[in-house]
Image 1 (cartoon, rainbow, N blue to C red):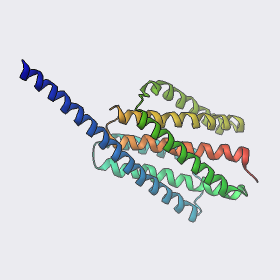
Image 2: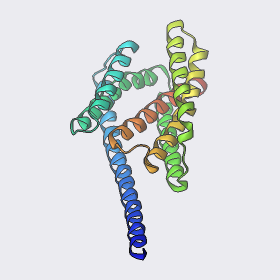
Image 3: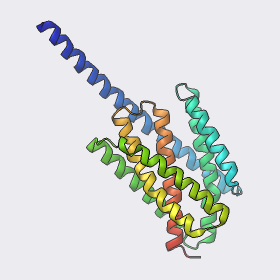
Image 4: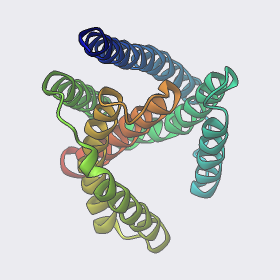
Length: 228
């Protein structure tokens, strides 16, 4: 009986150790891949700006985004999934280039607005990620709220585009700032507590949060601090 109890204890301890190592591996791989995709995305944005690429129609952006997102999800357990992640983030970075060029052209303080949005995005991401990792709180309860909120905000954004409603567009941007902040907490928590064990999909989740957070902050800053 003593030997059996000891074996059970050892098995549990081994399981916990393996779980911790697995979690650390997911977090490490996620942040490494996220860093590379962010750099690649920034490079593609730079290419679009240098070549004066015109803004893409929002329907093309949505089709390209969801198509590559579906492809990445389908390939998430293979090496091709990594290439798909770079295709997705590179495409999103390329669509970002004309947007940044527009802000730099329309606003005399466009460069300052872009840097403020970039700094705000970085500070928010680092702060929220550090909080989730250090406190190890479980934010899985936010899943339903985030899903519903993102759907509503997404539809609101399309409505703002179709009907040219600037006030609604700003409200959607403000909502996305809050939702993407929550998504960072949720995604980081999922990696810590085993809710997300695939670093490719974890990378996509965090990248999407960072991308939308930056765009939303940039729009809000331009609305309230932009100088034409």
